[in-house]
Structures are given as structure tokens and as C-alpha cells.
Length: 74
View 1 (cartoon, rainbow, N blue to C red):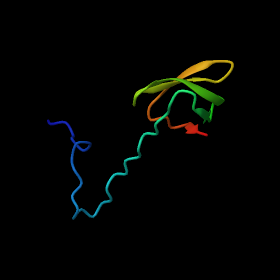
View 2 (view 1 turned 120 degrees about the vertical axis):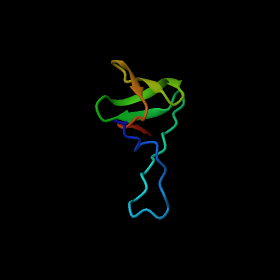
View 3 (view 1 turned 180 degrees about the horizontal axis):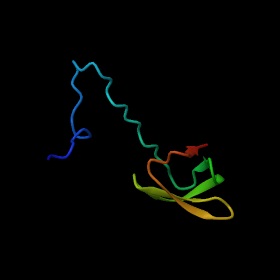
View 4 (view 1 turned 60 degrees about the vertical axis):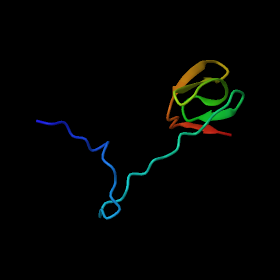
């Protein structure tokens, strides 16, 4: 039996189904002020392009992986 390839198939313009929505990954830079739903306010200390960011929240430093769902740039 073959594995499903739904993620690799392209969307046809004549399809009755909506095209999947691709949200762009937000870009962060060192010293950006950010807010996280769980940890609160912080400052970006290191950036791994498209992989993760390290954020200093005062009492702790956390590495937040992409797509940064709960992280908002202020």
C-alpha cells in the first residue's frame, strides 16, 4: 500500500476545495522586543534563521522554535 502524498500535491485552480493557507513565518532580529502568551515580555537575544529564536524573559531564557505561534513582535 502506498503512503498518502496529500501534503506534496499542488492545488488545481479548478478544484472545488479552497487552497491551503500558508502563513508566512515572522522574522525576528536581535534586540527585538516580543511578547509570549506563556512567558510574558522579553527581548530576542539570538536568531537561528527560520529555525528558532532565543528570548530573554528576565527570569529565564527560552528557545522558541519556528513558526513562533505564541510569539508576537512589539
